Image (cartoon, rainbow, N blue to C red):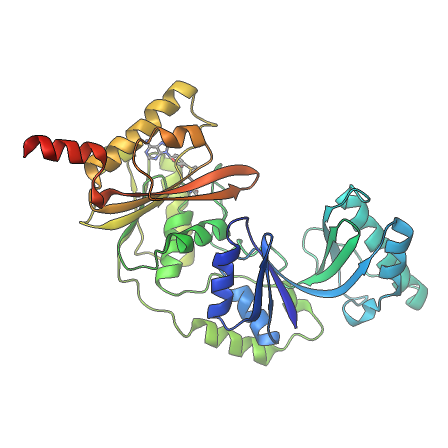
Amino acid sequence: MKILAKTFFALEDTLSDEILEIGGKNINPTKRGVWFEGNTKMLYKSNIMLRSALRILVPILEFTAYDERRLYKHIHEFDWSKYLGLDRTFAIDSVTRSNRFKHSQYVALKVKDAIVDQFRNNTGQRPSIDTKNPDILINVHLNDAKFTVSLDSSGDTLNKRGYREQGHPASLNEALAAGLILKSGWKGENDLLDPFCGSGTIPIEAALIATNTPPGLNRDFSFMNWDDFDQELWQEALVESKSKIKKLNVNIYGSDISERSVNVARECISNIGLNKIQIRRESFDLTNRPAETGTIITNPPYGERLKEDDLIDFYQKIGDTLKQSYNGWDAWILSGNLQALKLIGLKTSKKINCMNGDIECKFNKYELYRGTKRVFKEKSESE
Ligand SMILES: C[S@@+](CC[C@H](N)C(=O)[O-])C[C@H]1O[C@@H](n2cnc3c(N)ncnc32)[C@H](O)[C@@H]1O
């Protein structure tokens, strides 16, 4: 079957690599998604295992429609009884990029009407809508006049791993965090620190990666409500997905200045049972490297909570601390404030453009072990 895994801008290649690793075939990255082919077990495994995916869609109908009358006709003529029953609730999720149909809510409404009318005509009854927790989630994607209607096999987006109960005002999306860690190349070969850890997303996703723990073990998926859900195949997919889990062999640290953040991070860590992650309450400028070498992956505040002057001082301090206290480490910094990033004042060895929601960000790498200009100058002065 043809499958579309949705992801973030800039993570298409990372997700393609993940799909290849779990055995997907004919992998073809597209904008914010990756097409691939696989059987039903692959569909189950992709929901449990793909860290950088947001949704796994199975297309069931494609057509072109230039107006709402034809949209209704195409949906109404399709046999929905194969996927929906009167005993199941459903909802429509629609994404539109079209000048003909500007409002995605309106498209969703038309699709819903056509489905409901088909059931009413055929049975005299109709399935109910549940927008919060539907049994069956139907995804409608529209590009100009080309519609793709898919079953959403995930339901809740896959970043909802089941470890976060309390929110954090600036928490990173879990799939984005995991995708960026994978993109950095860190797989658990040395210690990792997130010194602005907030609710602990980066340390937790890093620990899941380092231990080969599938991210979707603690949640349900929408395909479990499908008529053809195969319990035996699901058990096989679960066993195969868990077969490579290993112990954590490196140290993973998180620190944050805020007591509330530290408490939320600890709660998330305990929810997922990764108790070896060490969380401390500490201001970054007072920290020192906990080992000779290691990797920092972090997203410091962008500035929405910091005043302009404070921001300059703050990012300069980040650069100073990296220079003075983290010799021998690599640091990856994600920030949506591109001007502030420049104030770090260190040479970047890699720059990746990405999006955090609708904020344009950079994910920059600094190699501190090769010495920054200032370290080099101090050395040569003392020689
Ligand atoms: C953008 S948030 C990080 C969110 C985190 N990645 C998550 O997923 O929850 C930035 C964090 O930096 C923390 N912070 C601000 N100033 C700090 C400092 N001087 N030292 C350490 N942490 C600080 C804030 O408390 C906040 O939790």
